[in-house]
Length: 459
Image (cartoon, rainbow, N blue to C red; front, side):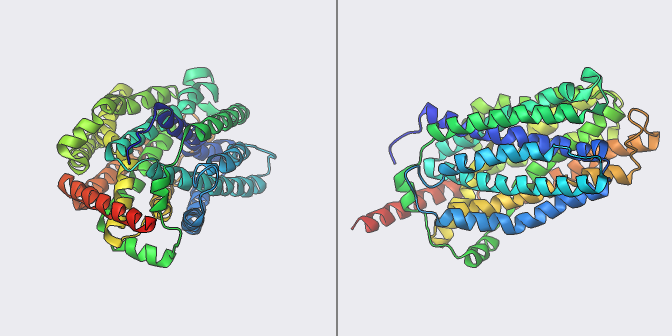
């Protein structure tokens, strides 16, 4: 394939994930606090709601992947139309989640559960085609890597609410300790409008390559596909890492709301933390492809996870009262996991390619749906924050005046669990079979396989 991706293609793909993340980051960071502090729902019930949503995803994600894979390309392509079809409903559903209609606890519990599950379903309708789109925009490894970096950048810009919400929706300004439900609702209305405008631009600026669509299978047997995936060590280990990466990001963001407003009593530091968490990735962006060419993705991930594990261990054992020490250690935690955050979608492309390599079938949508399902399981793991916070005795009515036992518990919850997640990712990446040499061999053989298939189809 000779045509290179244009700057407009890269921008169009980038901004779509910005729109996705505008609402997604609010769900991951503020929904637990909104449910406990504004609606009065217990932490155990909040965690149950999150887990029920993820159980439904076990059905919803593979089903959506099958539907998308079987769809025939139309005038707008195979995957691009979903950006508009699902983008507008996704924006509306995000507002509905934070629309408090009554003071009745039972109604609010059922309502937030229903709207959150609806949001998750529509998000799947968006995310599966969007992720699959990258795999039919290009088959070049460097361009795939660039698209993954673009997606990470787009997701980073989509975290703007995390920069502003500590000031806008926490009463009392930057050091406010209490969430304001009305401010949060109006802020989400603004977010929804921004999402809709961005989706229109993304649809216009992305494109699919017809020759890559030709090698994509439209015949899907989900049972057979799942069996193939479960036998594939590359797919299983990277899917688990993908789930843990989003788990640790969402977990830390959610736990930090309590850590900053209760343990440190400085809610405004949520903005500083977010800047610090993305700074390592910003530093790596210009060097990512050079690092991949020299060492390969697996070797970089091993080194990165080792650094993150060490920094996370120090943070947990140190129990630091000085917030700046915590922030500095957070920089090194995020420096270590930053590469995989940047390259996770390129590595997803690698394991989809690996499935094609070992089975001879190209099923990017169903494969991607399984990968995103594991990401949803990561979200479920992150959802234990309100359960753990409730278990240590957190009192929503004692804002700024929690007992010392609860404060110490909040610190432990915020540091020990992330340390365990990083250790798990380090173990998994050591088992991941796609070394630099193996990946290069796979790409060379795949290229020959695809050329032979296209030639046979043209006869």
